[in-house]
Amino acid sequence: MTPAARIRHASRRDAEALTALCLAWQGAPGASDPALLHELWGQALGDDDSSVYLAETEDGRALGFVHVTYQARPARLGWRATIEELHAPGDPEAALRRALLEAVVAECRRRADVIALYLITQPDLEPKLSLEEVYAQLGFRKRGRDVLVWTGELL
Image 1: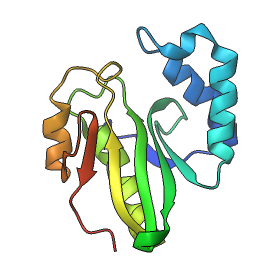
Image 2: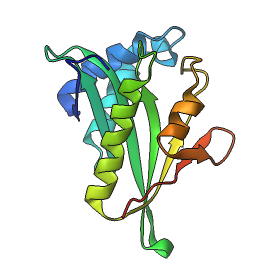
Image 3: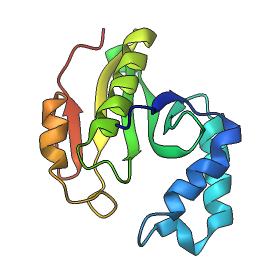
């Protein structure tokens, strides 16, 4: 992570920056309909059952983001958190990804009702650096084809 990077909760005013980050990916799915992409970010940022963390420089330039959703698990007396998207272009050492993941884990612990944390990998959008190794170092293990589960303590 660049020394000047900081991680913070994103708000509706960040929809434009998140849209621009998504459109910057080579072969970005959102390129076919940028207006819809922007609208979807607006909805996600206003959703009570999700959080978006934005990594940015001190001057406000967006570097990456993580989008996590929460689903009630009544029979298990808690909530499941799922990292739907985690993107940090230009992060070859994965330091930014680590910082974004740490922000999510910290939020799960603060909530004190999250019983499981999953991460949906997106091999089509993620660069081909050894992300599985990065995720393993952070405490995730493979759960399915494109799903990882965090093995650390949340409660």
